[in-house]
Length: 146
Image 1: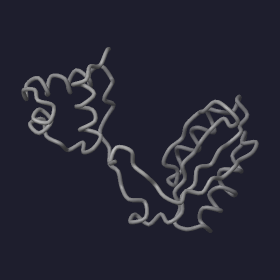
Image 2 (image 1 turned 30 degrees about the vertical axis):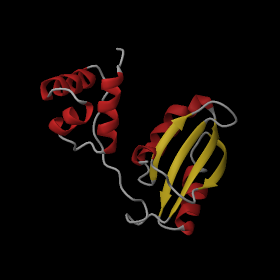
Image 3 (image 1 turned 90 degrees about the vertical axis):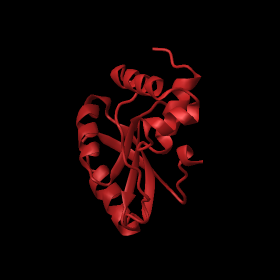
Image 4 (image 1 turned 180 degrees about the vertical axis):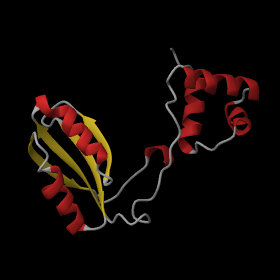
């Protein structure tokens, strides 16, 4: 499915605030409400829009330490590692990547001690994890809010 500039503008409006009404979206992109509704429905039916979510402020939620953890893993054990990572409540995002590392994981923790426990005692101990490298997050920037 090819997206045009109006579809992309609708998606950008929904990324900023998924609660935006069809009426407001239609006004913002200068189309009728019926057209905006039909486009959102089409993009949902076609799988472009997968769902609607909630963004929170990690600090206000109580997570004062964040890190990206890059992993090298045994490829034969990827499915088990994947399931274990997404089951961890402190894991916000998991990506299979190419390059120097195999997996990139965003971890949120209460504090540095909690982060150490998650990375060294939980993630590092998963069967098939060969090595890890931790990158501390000093500031989060939400590109959709800029």
